[in-house]
Length: 320
View 1 (cartoon, rainbow, N blue to C red):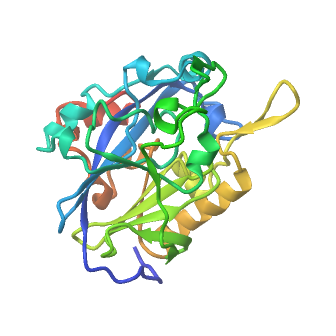
View 2 (cartoon, rainbow, N blue to C red; view 1 turned 90 degrees about the horizontal axis):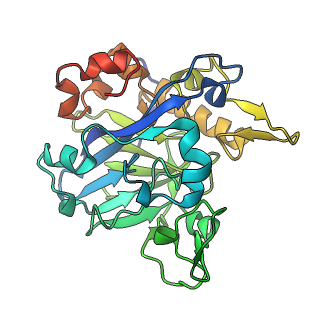
């Protein structure tokens, strides 16, 4: 790939591993793409382990979906669960970690790209020592959670076990505060480890506090964890438009809270790819695994993807 621009110098690197985070068994194309007419399909949900080479710190980027329904609010179960039929990964997340010699107790931090339930859930039971981190503004947007005055409020999406209720003032998470500096085509980046190996990117549009991240691998290539900044390769390359559909009340809905801002973030992702040579890994996109042409992205797959039948199932659009 011929590139015309370069990222800031770095003295460090990280190892990135893609994990299976389950997925949606009956995703609807019309919710992703304008005029989408594909029959219901399996939509993947990836998460990532970032291992900082020099300090040994281990960070999870998102958590994917769990089969434990108790980890989700009544709102999610009532209004969102049934429409897409989510499933957790075939191999539970803790077991995926142990198979690459990482114990869940070793996870230093969990950075949630955003607060939507297919990326974010209460984590203390699974990762007791991990610090939970969000993008700026997430807490104010998601408070109070679904428990208020000691009672469950069924029409509140956000989880009080993460964001607290209206009586809790001290919450056990933190919001990333920077310092923020320009990074490549992005206006605000945070050098997470201080050596240029892992950048947190302010990526607005999808929801308040939405983040992406850029990881510098040991071979010098950059992988951008784009999460839900963009939902498909077709939207990223401009061959399809993000879906904005009409509601019965005359309003409109989009998977992005601010579609115009989300489109600008997508433009920046594409610039990072086209002009800087970055490799883009979106949370719900499996096209590059199905095609198998991007050696850099293929190198970050968890070893379970080498098991018999896993890649074949993904190429067939099935659960790994």
